[in-house]
Image (cartoon, rainbow, N blue to C red; front, side, top):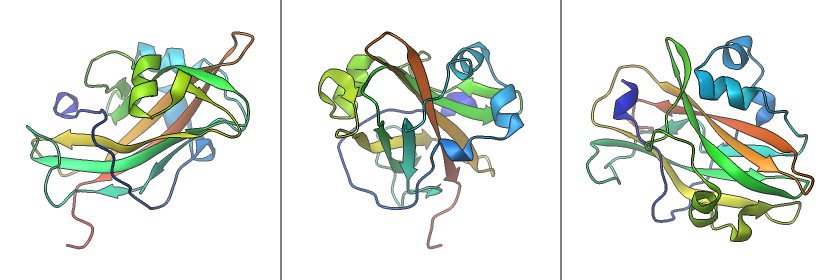
Length: 181
């Protein structure tokens, strides 16, 4: 159930693994179906060199949930980079459901520039060819397992110095099992 999942930022921990970039987001099922917010974000153009990566990917259940109030958690690192200077003006996550992609932020609305600056340790919420920003403790959580792996898309909207908006998206798969079990 979508309402049992939550996203956010907490204390930093380093997690190392594979990554996903915009190159993986090409399937028509990803591009063409989703809620109103998803359609709005997908209408924003991509920018070559504006990338989102999630590591490890896929991410497996944590041995012990690191999140108060949740029995299960998936902890991973999300990094945002760009060859061009951009200010991050909005970001969030969509979960894949039987009805398409739906906004899955625990707040029910997009995260802000201030959230990005704080959670991604990114002064002035600005990224460029020399500055990438990362949330080392990004997460998903649930109190119940559904028996299915979950697929999510993290999106970031950046604005250039001319006011033009661009998007970058990165996929993450949460696996409903422990990696070594």
